[in-house]
Image 1: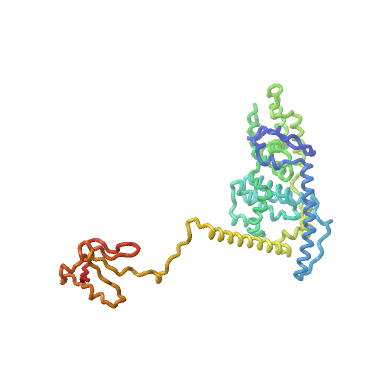
Image 2: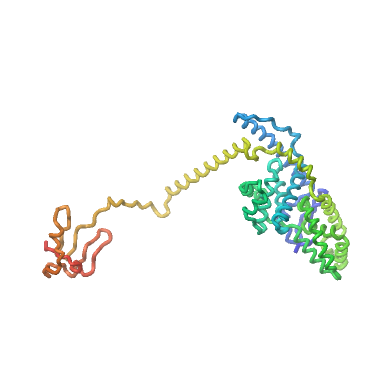
Amino acid sequence: MEHKVGEPSTSSGGSVHPLGQGPTPYYDTSQFRNWRYSSLQLRELRQLLNQKAQEILARNQELEKQAQISLGHTFTDPPPPTTYLSVDEELLLVRFYCDQASKIVRDGFQLPDAVETTAVTYLKRFYLKNSVMEWHPKVVMPTCVYLAAKTTNYPIPMSHFRDRFAKLNPQDILDNEFLVAQSLAFEFWVRGPDKALRGWALDLQSQPGADFKKIQDCVPKSLEFLANSRLTDLEFIYSPSQISLACLHLSNPTMIDSFLNWQYESASPGEEPFGKPREWINGILEKIEAVIKSAGDGPDLSKVKGIDKRLKSCTNPEKVPGTALYIKRKQEQEAIAAAARAEKTLKLKKDMSDEMVFGDVIQTIPKRERKPMSPRVSLGADRSIDLDRSKGSDLSNKLNLESESSSPQNRGEPTGMGVKDEAMGLLTGGSGLKEVGLLTEES
């Protein structure tokens, strides 16, 4: 149960506290190692992504114009760079779709908080590696929800999932799944503050004279503040336990202050319950609470619509299905994939011809080329009969099938060995030819 407030953290002012080994398993996660930033670091990272996206967009729009002209189509000049989205506008659009993802998971599929937290985190992490002007959130968000349901062990069948996104091709969700996973560096586990909040609720019940009814009523209100915190950057700056305690403090400040006072008063002299002074914890809670309050009920819808309208004219044409550049890039990728498959097939054939694991392939002999069975019949040591039909001899003249009228001395010897096959040996054995009623003539 994670509830250590005194974990190393970054402050909202941009200065970074030492990220040393902490007292909880949170410090052993990839979330702590690879997805922790300060506010200043986040700002610089997004500014760099925005600048890079503008450069790619300007280059690809010119390539789109040339491709359209080569096809004989009319093409309007691309919009000026002044219409490109700013960092704040990109962030506002991402937060709007984070809010939509929460509502779809909670109200559309009635899935637990873990799925909601994971889906929103996936979307926010994706746009720390990509720009809105390259990948529109309305395409990426459904894929994040679909992937989060699987990684949290609440998979949604595509037939049921498709009903919530009627205007989106299911194949687009599957095609973008690897793109999202790659942007996440295949780090799917998300440690959200929802579990830490319930852990704090249990600790609140352990103090003397705890009011269980008040604690129970505090949790639902805290979860509402927690939902607002998902629309912010708090999870990139603070630990889950710090965020969850701030949500509880927002719902009932008196109860949380009383709990913290009891923790510090009952501690041994010289010891700090959470590894930090009480003043430091109060400062962290104030900063987190200020960010949650500023998030409000979500982004302004009118601003979001204006940004989305501008985004249609400044989206990378290489990523938009139907554009000339998109078709050209897809054909190039298909040609490369076909060449790779042909090269692999040729290599497999060459390897098979160079080295046969079980020797050369056995060549079967057609029936018409097989040699006939030997015409010699063994009748013993001193007898034999020629059955060669090429001499025109009549077999009925050589063999008398009426065994009862034959003399005993003309019968085959009891030790006769029968007809021989060149490859497999004897075809008829036992007591000799006399058992099958064949009479022979002496040569």
